[in-house]
Length: 285
Image (cartoon, rainbow, N blue to C red; front, side, top):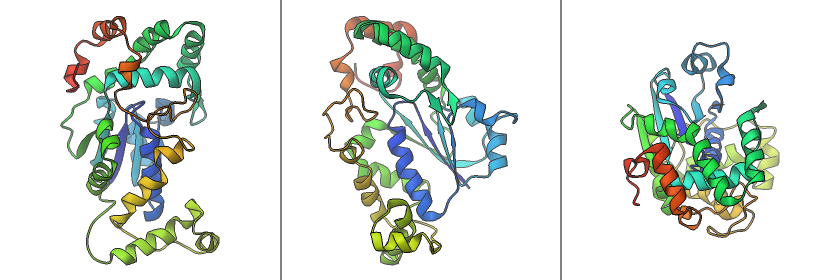
């Protein structure tokens, strides 16, 4: 059965994709990443595109409910985040660091939006970001949170207890499983990942010329290793969560940062544009 990850914009989807690509490499799974509708041009739907490509793991950002309903049966993850944090994170990313091309396709709306953000102050920029975020928040509002086979996750939980959340997530995707032969599976996954991780060096050199070991599921120990490899400190080149670099894709790495940036004017603008979106997703005001 197809496995899938649905990451909303600014919900740590880059971090999640890194962990999933690592697991897929260890297991020899084919990954298909879909960011924009242009990628399935020539097909009637994204579902038809996925059926044609036949991936083992689909990674899709900003999926809509209508798009989801065209997909084949799957086991999936869907990640959401406090909409206020999505807006704040989006503001800094869209102003400073987000690439203007995705899969070789220019994101023209971002180019124009970035120009606006560069010309106004932070308060006005956040107001502009509130409107721009509709492309991410509207599909999040319209999503069916009882889709069959989909495990719903919050980024806040992934950050607060990454080991428990990722163990649950990877188990749901049938990528990790407890049981016997843990040491053998760990040795196999270490070998399979050596060429990707380039460590241990002796294995990495040999792995470039020798094939992977067939492996159906990863050992539970893989979760802790993946989280260490893709920790905020490593991805941000030494910063700890909460230490900010506004020009980095990994800007701050904490939840609730909206309190440091959004004024009453911004909060009222969010309500005017999106209604009770904050309460809808169970976040406190």
